[in-house]
Amino acid sequence: MTNRVLIVDDDQQIMDWLYLDLQLSGFSVDCASDGLNGLQKARQNHYDLLILDVMMPKMDGYEVCKNIRKTNKELPIILLTAKGTIEDKITGFNHGADDYLVKPFDIQELLVRMRALLRRSYPQEQELNEVLESGDIKLFPDSLEVQIKNKLIKLTPTEFEILYCLLQHVNQAVKLNTLLKEVWGYDSDEDVRMVRVHMGGLRQKIEVNPKTPKYVQTITNIGYKLVPFLDEQINSESN
Image 1 (cartoon, rainbow, N blue to C red):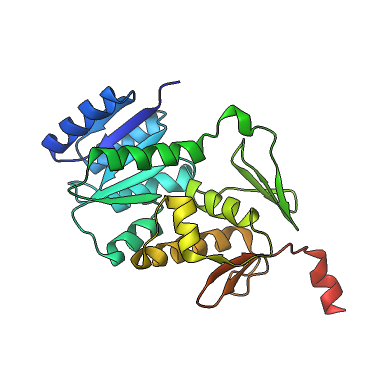
Image 2: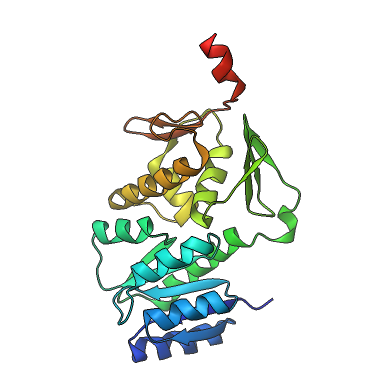
């Protein structure tokens, strides 16, 4: 199956370059030259991945990303920008982006990140029927679904991948750099903050009270640990 990609960028030279290289790499490519048109196309058509510039006329990439996430939690989104500070990255992740590339970049780096996102967003057939469980949590890699006490929880691809990683290390401390390597494919002390941003989003969706998490616990100065917590423990602990 050919993956369909939408490129949204007001720089015609970059868009032409990406269009040609992605087509040669086997992708079906569509383009938009401003944020508003990009948002309209993303809403009206099916795409497997979105490549989104930040600084654009009519609507910037952050707002496009934010609006898409209101109705589509699953679409993988890569932001492109000339700004490379950690604050800019965190802003992008807070608006729902899955990954972030700073211009100028090598096309091979973009392709690696695209394929990593597509692999975890659309698992292959051999992963079918796998179920990971810990306490109240059930994760189904084939359908990208997570259930808490049998209630379906919608996660972004990155949040899903973080939880998947933690479920492979239940009751073990997982280092921040380990999460970076397993989820994003690299580790960098600078980028551990983006793990914390995505973890905040994950906790908002799976925890009853994100400020006092029961499932994903913080291990100070190390990382996180997923514990096999059952909600029935709340009642027994209170008696």
